[in-house]
Length: 181
Length: 181
Image 1: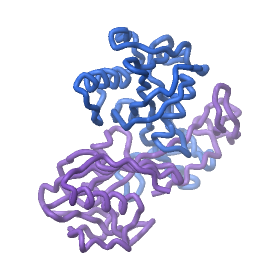
Image 2: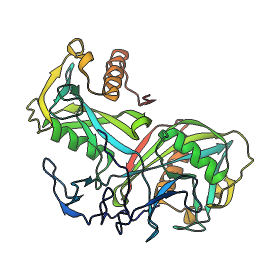
Image 3: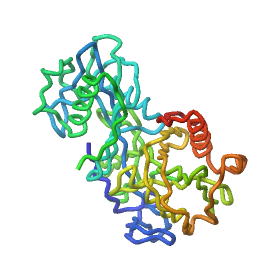
Image 4: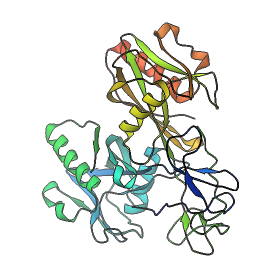
């Protein structure tokens, strides 16, 4: 889930950029010496769900790198033209072919090292007719004791699942904000 | 708070891009016909605080466009290398020169029209020695009845302030997620 986003040329005119601190700024940016366009690089949001069916949660086995063959919750980059919640629904449909109803934001996880913020909603599966897309080898339901903890694709997914099962034991779900080192 | 982010040239090699749907994708992206770099444009996070001192909240009068001369809560674009919370603290320092302690995420507001997600934390001011930066004409404390509602710079700021005062009357603060049309 990492793009190479390094900027070498100006997006407006194609000239090679210089890295410098613009006036009234305090960080180096890619600045175009020809047309003066300043290029900002900012964190990306990754949005997904914890789809729940009774006692079970839905995981997807990844068909793509990184982490091919590992299990994940349905999630992906938030797109322009959608809300955080709409993105989470879209990714759940695209990766698992699963239809859900969102039940509230559950985790907000900063992954500073890669410039991402991950958001997971709790979601109630409307049925168990999954139809995974090309990014997913298999989508299936797991009871807590069946979760393949050593084959989870991403730290944020593991963190979200652990907190989900812990909150469920407590009988109350909160919003969890945390930083992933 | 809106960048012109339109991509005309490849950031890697400077060639003029073409807009097309890449293989295994379902949206038009700027694709480089020379080096095949795919350019994604994703929503940006704006992060800030509701700085509180007793019964009062801190607002900043903007010294820059857009909305020069209007009042806002301290907020700005989240940067690489920081968490949502760290960005909110940094903006509070840069725009108001105010030192605060965060007290929990308060609003998450989607502004789909401009491709942004705004986050505001409730924050306790540690003192009232403000030292506004170059983006701010004036930073001052307001009681609820003094808030210049017709001179608030942004919808998300107005929404956040209204919900803050409403929750305070109720005696309990929650997380509010909403979409700004």
